[in-house]
Length: 94
Image (cartoon, rainbow, N blue to C red; front, side, top):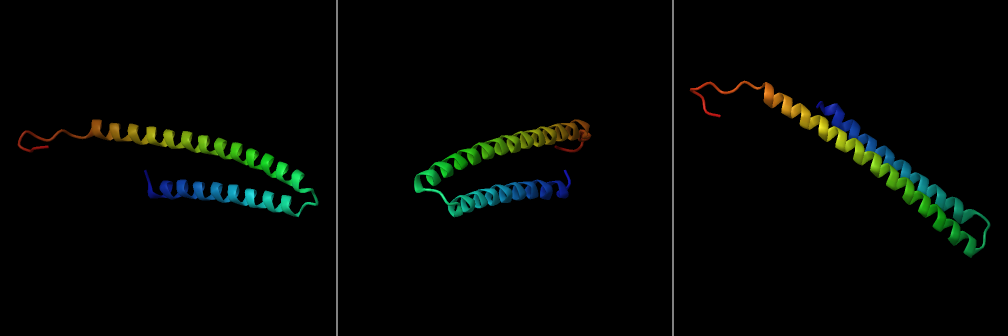
């Protein structure tokens, strides 16, 4: 794999992480500045936290699937390279 592929994967994790953190901070700030009673506010924060957790689980599963796909591709590539490699001549040792 090229080095650019590696950096792209890391960038994807960074962007998704930043989006999740930004969304969470925005949601909490919006809730804190909304004119509601303490009980309503706590209930809404609880609901938003549950929604955020579900979104995070979905993103984690998506990233896990992508990582497994990449690992499978790398494994296939290595197996192909090994199969195509020339065996050492009789005078050489492996």
